[in-house]
Image 1: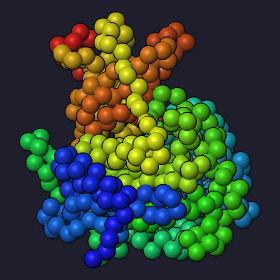
Image 2 (image 1 turned 180 degrees about the vertical axis):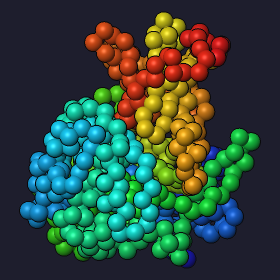
Image 3 (image 1 turned 135 degrees about the vertical axis):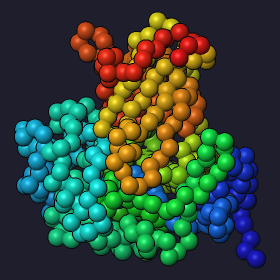
Length: 478
């Protein structure tokens, strides 16, 4: 029998207790502290085929994949094969967008720090072949543009998929093959892949969701098309994600001590490139990372979600500390579990307390300004009121559901929303699957609200004439 240290025992006790309280089927946690790895795992890979979850169980890690894409591209920068401030068309000359000047001006860095003016998502199913990403980029002229290149930051999967095409063009290899060669192989990340078929041959955490009756269901394993690999298609274990964290904490060395990338390049990725406003993503964007100052320390982080799964990765470079969490239930309890574990780990090991801001009491006059529908290419958010005050609901557009052959994540029903102190039109979600997510409203020159940012993504206000029915801003009415 393998003995455990007091730290491991305490972590395991907390993970087991919290996962049991929330009823999440499975969770794996890895922590790098005091120059060693500590793990705490609980539950099963699937309620239909219950195998134990451990640090080597594979999870869909969602947008943590963006840190892989950004780092692979920065390795090409370090090798002199890509220039960070060069226009994207230097490497992808075939790029066409709805606006020619926009396509000509976007730079590589703007893709990586979410200032390229591209919308959050662009829905285009281009198959599983090596040409999937090329075909996706060929269709980008159909996608919406939300701002000028280098302007307002807005989180963009589309931008990262385009960045993946740069990697393909420069290396002459399919994206997933290139990243494996550039990063996963030299770092010994043998549990990380973009292939669902490969993952299913190993211990793999099935996604789970709850129905309206609260009953938990195991879903068929599924991931988005190959063209979405750069923005969110990686599959990996907590052990591999902790290895990835150590690579960035050591500024470019593998576990064997081999130099894989120059230290200054990894350090550059952790420096602010653009400030963020009113978002739970952080205070600023680096390159492939979000940055925040919490309780006196700088945190470098990225999260990821897939249908029925959530993953979180946070680094504290000045303390040589990292915490990784992956769980297999969505859209709400897995996120709540991950957040609770991350906050516990920061406080328990570092004494760092991550507190959410307190919202203001309900204000009917301010509520009238914000009630309405807001949309982007993929989703609609509806801000309304009920007996408790302001609420927010999120839904995938019905036409996209109808056009998709794949199962899509469940919509999120109305949950609490509170406005925050100050004059910045900021808010925080106070209930449901988006608890703790922050955002802000955008006004035009006349002071009218024309958009809402949620979790770093822009949703433009839908004109009242395009909305069905009428809503009051008084609590207790719908």
